Length: 218
Image (cartoon, rainbow, N blue to C red; front, side, top):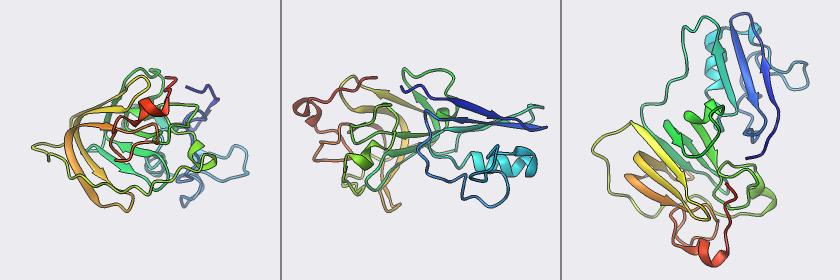
């Protein structure tokens, strides 16, 4: 994984941490109403200018896990969303939310226990995470999902994500998948998702990574 700077923005009651190694500049923070994040201001994040609840709300919108918060009185901490979800984004990554356990990543990446943007084009230099290489790589896939899955008897619980060496993302746990237009498209508890960009059955792996010579580098 790429090693980029972490910055802690300190407030009287709450601190916000930004991890540059995970940020893909979706701008959920910068476009949020209020004075928490203002582009061009120094520092650009100032937690004391808004209520703590507003800070928490904005931080938890971050789809990549690059933003986290710490309340100094430990009165609250982030909790996983009740349902594990993956959105297969239009020409972009998998946006994953829930009770996430991503195998073989650094323990200090706290945000990705709840929110992550995972590469599906095969081009990221920060695998298994997206680094926006799909843009320069001209990756094209609009996020259609053709299969409906086996269905779910339960929801929630831990979602285990194993990036298989030179292969797909192996998913284990209760999962609801949304296609690129937001439709609930697939439900199940086991899946192998393409991350080489070459599958003809996206978002699912069809073994194309072998012929494509995909190297995961993670």
